[in-house]
Image (tube, rainbow, N blue to C red; front, side, top):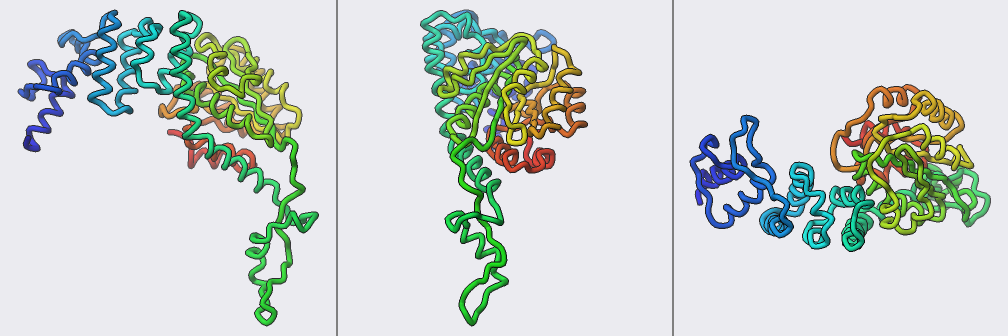
Length: 385
């Protein structure tokens, strides 16, 4: 096939055919089934009502064939987008309650969020299939993110424990001490005379930082809930951190006791409903016992259904007490989030940064918070657009 023919083929697949597509190009073979898979989701008639009628109907077998086709003809990243679009555009939510459908779909964060939202209405058999799918998603996220998170946090704790007055010889970091004193090298003696030592404060076996994750479980935050739960479980596995995790809508649920199993934790959430950020902040504030050594992370789009001024006063009180408060408008790969700009501006005015963060950047954010670096400056260079 010539380059010109290939371009027309691609345009034909994009435009969907019909007399107005202008390509004059026909499809055959596998391209026909690829086009049908696209048409099922995206060719529901144009703005003028003209166009082929797509859709998957209410037929589980038809949906199963469609899921098989898109996995055959498209890469997994495209499959995930098409699944998400099909659920939203064609209202396939009911069919996702059927176990055979769950076995056919490609596991991804968005689908996991949809299943968590349906948790309360699922029949028991479908719930087991949903748990298996969510477990696959969690396992993949842990494989991708856990080691990096532990390394970043451990390194930050070590750096924050450095001192120029180590109490014992065993606490001296000799490599850093030598580098810091190279200008004091005496060639005639072939040695370095240290004018200052670099080492660690007494190694602590106890908790060095308290971390509170406070997660908005309104429907728009589904992907953030999944990622935050995985990160919460990773942080909770580190003895040097005391990690608490609460989720909220108009009520607050403390899921700290489920941090050992992020899948169980996720099925303890209830996506959807209203939002009372003030109540959640008040609860999270009560979990903090050492303000100067605590990090409070609120993950929310900041659309407050509670008492706004009280919420802002509570956040201000925490920062004045020494708590490192960070607001994440989203913890996901979904790009620019929708959020309450007025509340974000009010928080920024009191020195509390509010920004979106990708999962890949979160380990470094935790390291920056532990070292008490300037999070506003960090966000300018690392936050999601």
